[in-house]
Image (cartoon, rainbow, N blue to C red; front, side, top):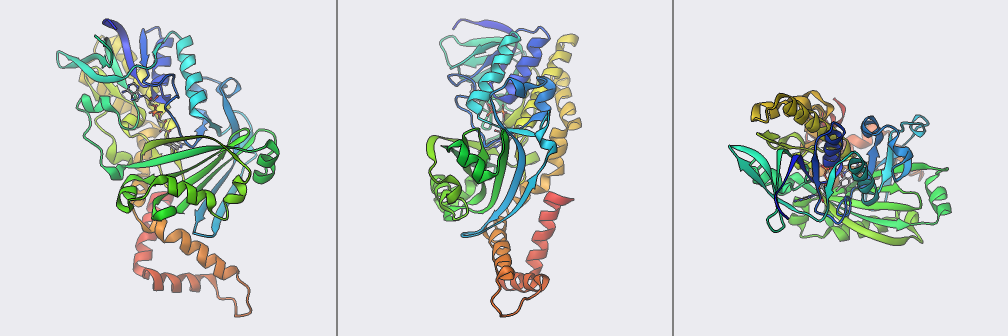
Length: 434
Ligand SMILES: Cc1cc2nc3c(=O)[nH]c(=O)nc-3n(C[C@H](O)[C@H](O)[C@H](O)COP(=O)(O)OP(=O)(O)OC[C@H]3O[C@@H](n4cnc5c(N)ncnc54)[C@H](O)[C@@H]3O)c2cc1C
């Protein structure tokens, strides 16, 4: 590849990079969107639910054209013990109407479609091209090096949207190596079911869909969660485990997925299903404390590359922060073009915009959640405690029916002590409630 010049180079055609590229191209800038995969989405996976309102502002009514699976009107959150489950089941009629609250999507088809929208707006998409490094000139980033012969692509501005382990942010000196306790690993299987079984097992009509998230002790004592999402005629079934717990237990995440699939509350939902595909991906889960330096002269970092994921154990939102940060990166670069100034001071406007947006405000608001996710009792003890307590309470055996509060107090005192339980309760309250 000979040297080429663009107004902006965007590394990574996930939701963050594609959003930035699309918005810049709409304003008439010459943009290269560089993707290492065979096509955008080829290497991407998530659970997952795309919450629709943020994207709807960028591509109004996207769900009428994009390859979405089902809208999500039912959400279940559950605590899982080895042999039982306690759930909160929420079903909303409001979520059945445009612009909907969220859709189950498959990234391989969705990211490809979204990048196609950017291409239609004038973006040059370069697939199968790995961005390796930044080019610096006069103390500013002035392009990227790609893994091809003479592969230099010059630009006035670069956006690193190259995902969770962003090589580019590191090469630009914007972040240090991450620690294992800042990441979780997610694996997912897509399992095909006959449409009738989908409707009957999950109480779905037409395009209605379900997102179901579980917290508990996964197989081999891994700390994490699990999920089931309904596609049109298949299920996305997966587990997420903290990388440090995988390391500490010497366990594999495949075992955790197998044990989740064999759980007595889960196995009947999957019965007769046909395995279609398998994928795995890292999630930056440490919240505000893993956000790197977000800018330098000529360069911005967006999406997972900047650790902008809202993770709270029973919820995980990464696509919206990615789309929003991509939009704010594009707006900052438009300012820079208008001022003819790509200095660090001008790029700092990106951070200010992020601070004013829900992205950094949510990370700040839920900073206690990132800490709480490291509390091993959240997985090892409380889910099974809740299941056991309710099992005892609901058991009718003629031996008397104790009051719930007394039972809870007695069991907590025996198991972990009331002081520890109070401290954990306060931590969970700070993380989720106030
Ligand atoms: C198991 C799991 C479940 C999840 N569930 C949800 C969910 O339900 N809802 C939700 O909102 N979020 C969810 N997320 C998080 C969400 O997927 C991410 O936060 C989101 O994809 C981030 O978008 P991004 O564009 O920043 O990065 P990515 O989507 O990772 O895109 C980065 C892109 O850059 C490319 N790339 C990487 N390195 C290079 C390079 N050197 N050169 C060129 N290209 C490169 C990659 O191939 C990729 O296309 C989940 C994640 C996982 C792993």
